Amino acid sequence: MLLRTLKIAGIIALALLATMLIVTFVKSPKSLSLIKPVTLVHGADHAKLHRTALEHLAQATTIPVIGYDDSNNDSINHESILKFHQWVRTTYPLIAKNAKWQIINHHSLLITLKGRGSKASAMFLGHIDVVPTPDSSDWKYNPYKGTIAKDTLWGRGALDDKNVIVALLEAAEYSLAKGLPIKRTLIFAFGHDEETGGENGAAAIAKHLITNKIPVAFIADEGFGVMKGIVPGLKNNCAIIGLSEKGNVSIKLFVNELGGHSAWPNPENATSILSRGLSRLENYQFPAHLDGPVRGLFTEAAPYMDFGYRALFSNLWITAPLVKTVLLGGEKTAATIRTTHVTTIIKSGTKENVVPPIAEAIVNLRLFPGDNIAFVTSEINRVLNDPRIKVSLYLDGQEATPISPDHGDGYEQLKDCIHAQFPETVVVPGLVITGTDCKNYTAVTDRMYRFVPFEFSNSNLSGIHGKNEYITRSQFNKAVVFYIDLFQRL
Image (cartoon, rainbow, N blue to C red):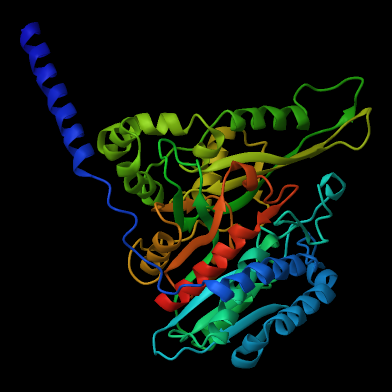
């Protein structure tokens, strides 16, 4: 009987292995070099682009619109925002002449370049503001001087996100100068407060579009780019188009107990109760998921991976538990497959010899699609398991955005243009774990694609919201050419 059982188990194991091998080899890689550029920029045009585009971006980085967590943020930045608007008009005279210009909510910029066709508009987002630089003295070059050294621009906004704004404007100005047809109406929406949530910028633009019944077919925004050495087992560069982004909510934990003199402390005081609760919470992790855009990333990339990874990711129907374990082993990869939480603020006490009656903490969560605010709040209450710790929303949260289709209008043009401008690059869907202005446009269109044509690696990613943010001339010029080509595909 045992022999028969072992025999059957062996047959099943062989059958599974055979099936896995068949699936692995059936999903063979397709050629990545079939798509050619629609628009070629060469000769004198390329030389001019090489001379001026990065210089324009450098100028843009010298106008600091800084996203402070301050209710007076707009008034603080008012003069710089107006200066930036004027700089755009002066630097791009053909756009100034041919486009419709609108200032939304006093500060955000909406530029509409009318197309010849009747299709709904293609919309491109960027944001004028940047994060603060409290570490300016540690930078290689002053973050607001727009320094170009050896064909590399150093400055705040060089990668997040003035590079996108200037690349779009350079491409549109070039298209107008060369008489290239604007086939589909292009809308450029440049918010002024993305770094603080976009409530006064992107949200106001979205309201304007809805109120005036302006149809938008799809939106392209920041998110991923052409990633180098990011996906395990993949030798090719990988262009990830974000179909959704995580939600964001902060939860307040509050304890109010009797205080008193520190000479005779009660072990069940506010700080000890909160500390034990935080310890339980830090040792808990939300469930991991391998579905939606995350699953799409690995299944689409699998045919181009080394054999071991290819077999692993081609057979998620059976290997998913193992893949989850591997991904949960790294903080960045773990964040792509589950809701994350971390304590960011702790407050208690005002004097060294007084037991504080109140202790509070703020826990920030980034929500995986499907884990809504009500669920995570309930789960935190369950894990804390202490009615003395009161749980409430600290600020209004944002659910994860709906998942956009990985086919059709917008996605296909981006994908083709990536293949044309970045040869041998694998294009896959993905989930953006940080926030973008897209979250404010969910009522405008169900097609939002978070991709920008810039090459990212571990070496330059650290500059985003960090110090020594930079971009090279060749990287930036390639992005301008990408948008010139993309506009002709629309």
